Image (cartoon, rainbow, N blue to C red):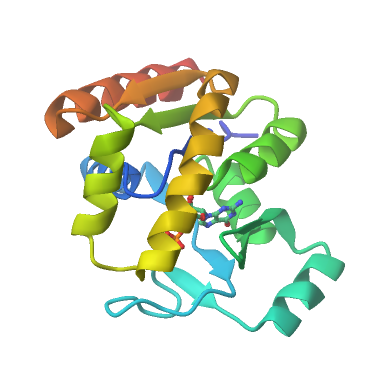
Amino acid sequence: MGKMGVLFVFSGPSGVGKGTLKKRLLEEFKGQIVDSVSATTREPRKDEQDGREYFFISRQEFDRRVENNDFLEHAEFSGNCYGTPRENVMNLLNRGIDVVLEIDVQGARQVREKMSDCVSIFILPPSFEELEHRLRERHTETEDKILERLETARREIPCAPEYDYQIVNNDLDAAYDQLRNVYVHAAQRA
Ligand code: 5GP
């Protein structure tokens, strides 16, 4: 049997820039690492496409998939459900391709239980004030949702020590360098 891919778990509060960092990693290591497209019951945002950012499904369909054990992990976040389709991830890993999951703290705990050799990374904001600023700059959420996400961030940030690595995203280039080092190191070790 060939070499298995490495599973990377990425978490951090909404607005911390983890999506941007992930995108950069996927671009630099195209063909070696891919991200998994999650299913969600959340409404698509303006520029989002079904099957690209997420598979947008109904609550009923989500529950059916949970029942069917189709998800590697799933969690409720800010009033919506999110889940990682298991089969696609396992197929990629079996083919020796690395996979990154951008998931919340609850989902990361489930993945660590099931896949003990995964590599987990938590992205931290330089400060809570800066996080609030970035979340507002995005203009993707209503005020209610922003407050809810900030509240969630207050609960999530203390979970950072559960992760193998913590990276503070103050300067994007510096944060990316650290992420890149973690990736190259972990991917070689496997
Ligand atoms: P958003 O609604 O901003 O796209 O995502 C909200 C949160 O849900 C983010 O923290 C994101 O990492 C997390 N998330 C996205 N997909 C999944 C998933 O499949 N499982 C879990 N547990 N969390 C997810």
